[in-house]
Image (cartoon, rainbow, N blue to C red; front, side, top):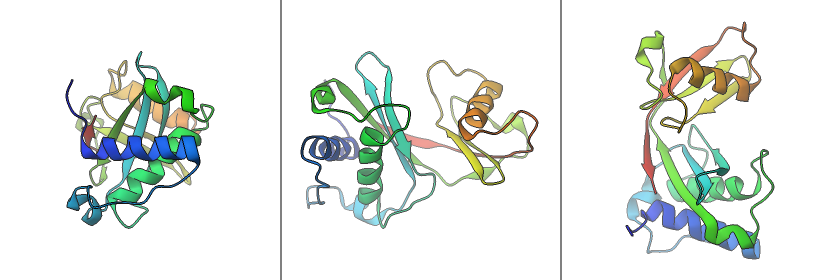
Length: 173
């Protein structure tokens, strides 16, 4: 089996320590130097081994000082504060598959032809409401479907005017 990326190893370690001991672990020198230097938005996704979503929380803009903190805080939130699921409990830890998506800068979309749900994630915005959908999600094949789901997540009604932004991700397993 292929070895997980350092971002994913870090996220798993964070989740395990938080779920078992309610402790936020600190960074150490074994983590890649770039994680201390990079500031990016990121999402941490948890799936069961059968592929079913178990939690996903993230930031589209960096909120913390570096990627280490961004991944740590989003990993804890994905495991314990995704409103769609109860908090992960220790007995589930061995059944979790964790991925980390590092986001590019957002680009305003002027024409829907610029979008492709396999390549780009989207942010839809209407006033203070904002919905985000990552790219390349199984079962989402069309731009219309991607935008409909993002709008629904944000509570944006069909006829409300929206601004659309796109982004790419570097996805790690």
